[in-house]
Length: 356
Ligand code: PMP
Image 1 (tube, rainbow, N blue to C red):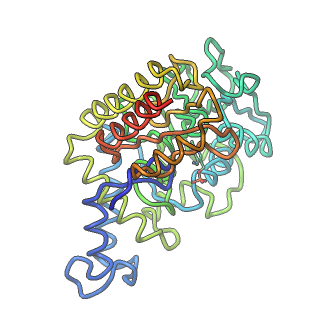
Image 2: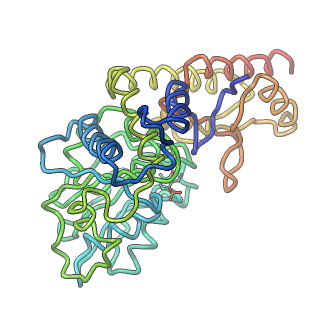
Image 3: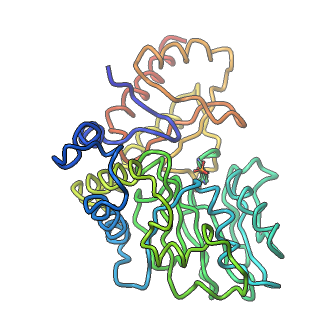
C-alpha cells in the first residue's frame, strides 16, 4: 500500500511521475535505451534539458526577463558557496537574514569570502519566527534570505524592498505559492522537495548580475560558464533533470503555481486548525510565520508519544518525526502530497484525543 509520505525531502512526488519515469528507465522515448544509459549529449536529452530550463522560467513567470535557469549539482549547499563566489566583490560586503539552520549554513560559507553582515536572527528563540523590521544595508553586494525554513516550520510571507540584489534559497517552497519572482535576482532550490528527486539544484539568475566581482572563479563554480554551456558544462544529473521535468509538466497540467497554491493552503489550514483545536498538541512556530510546507508541532504530554507514533504508523503514515536537531513532529506537505493524506493525519490526531 502506498504510504502517506510526510518526509521533508527527498519526498513524495506525483504518482504519475513515478509511473512515467519507471517507463523511461526501461525504454526512454521509444529509443530502445534507458534514461539511465543515454548520453547527455544525445538529441533526446538535450531536448529534456532545454525544456526543463524553459519550463522552470515559465512556471515562475520569468521568461524573457533576463533570467537564465541552470540545473546544477552539489545540492543547495553548493549554492551557499557559489553565491558569494559569483556575487560578493573583492573587498565587498554581503548581507544575510538568519532564519534557521540552512540560512546559517549559507552565512558560514559567505564569511569565508568577505565581510558578511547578519541583518537579523531568530536564533535566540530557536528560530520559531521570522525576524521583522530589519534594515538591509544599501551598500552590500546582495541580500540573502531563506524563504522557507524546512527544519523549524517557518516561512517568509513578505520580502524586504531594497535597492541591492536579492538572493533567495527557495529549496523547500519553490513552485508552491505565488510570489513576484522578478523581485529576486537569484533563486536556488535543491530539487528534492517540490521539483524532483535528489541530485540536482535549480538556479535561476538574472544574467546582468554576473561577472562583476573581480574574482577568479573556478570554472565549476562559475555561473557564467554554466550558462554558456547551457547547463552542460559537465555531465548533468540526467535522471534527476528528467524526473524534474516530468514533475514540472505535472505542475503545469494542474494549472501551475496559482492552482497548487490553493491546494497547499487547504492542506495547511486543515492541519493547523487541528493542531490549534486539539488540546493534546501545540505548534512550535509563531502563527503568523507558519510554513505551508512544513508544519512543526509537539505533543504536550510526551508520555503519549509511543501511542501516537503507533497510531500514525498503523494509519500508513511515514516520515512524521521532526528533524533530529529539534525533535517533535514535522508534517511536510509538499505539492504532491494529496489533501486526503492530511485528512488521515488529522483523523489520527482526533482519535488520540478521544482515546486519552
Ligand atoms: N536549504 C534548505 C531550505 C533546505 O531545506 C536544505 C535541505 N533540506 C538545504 C538548503 C540543503 O540542501 P542540500 O542537502 O540539497 O544541500
